[in-house]
Structures are given as structure tokens and as C-alpha cells.
Length: 179
Image (cartoon, rainbow, N blue to C red; front, side, top):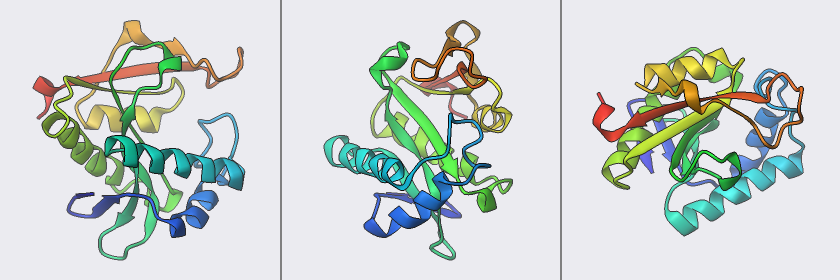
């Protein structure tokens, strides 16, 4: 569990399933994904994160506001999946409910995740990637000190050719770059 001034990043609980499914069914939240998720797809995402937490001790953690306990989505880290073809390493990511946008919560939680990755895991580098059209996520990446790897941009292998979100950008930050 990670705690910041305004957030708690914690392991997933069964009671997170319903609000996470609602978040994943929101077309605004999922606009940079191929589609919204069904309840079964959303639950499968939680199951994968619970498994990662149990096996390696980290995941895209369920995230809640400290003051209210309100579930707002996830912020966390995971091992980079092999199918991206960008090498081994740690990926940072976030997905927040629309009512949590524009408050600096994603960068706040992401900074805590970077500190965890570099101090506890001794990761030499953390990467992030998103659809080339996802300006909001790229701004978060830049706010937390990540730099775009122009030569690392790639087409997402799980998204059909010609889809507007298939082209992805890659960002990196090394342990020595932490501010």
C-alpha cells in the first residue's frame, strides 16, 4: 500500500468490482481504448491485478481518496507485458473516474509509484505508453518527469490496423532522473 497526501493506493477488494465496472463502462474514461469493457472484462482486469499483487507484490493498485475513501480507479506499476516488444521492465499506468480528473491526482499517485519502483524494486527504469492521441496521459507522463522515447513509438499489437488508437507513444524515466 502506498499513501500520498490525498490518495491511498492499495490491493484490490471485492467491493471495488462494481465501481470499477462503472468506470470501465464510461465512454469518456475509455475513449483512448478500443471500447468500453463489459462487467466480465472489468472483473478479469481486477483478477489479473490481484494475481500480480500476490505473485510479485505490486500491480495497478486500486486507488481511493484518503479523505473520503471514495474509489476513483487505479494507479500503479506492473511488469511490461512481453507482447509489446519493448523489452523487460516496469510499466506505470493509471485509469481514473472522470470525477477525479483535473485535480493532479494521477501525477500524485504516479510519483509515489515511481518512488516505490526505484527505491523498493531497484528498477533502473520505468516506462509508460499510451495512444498517440491521448494528450491527457502524455501530460501526466511529462509532469512526473518522463521523457518521450521518439524511437520507441510502436503500433499496439492488440489493436487492429487502421484504428486511430493503434499508434502508441513510449515514455521513459530512469532512477537517476527522479526529481
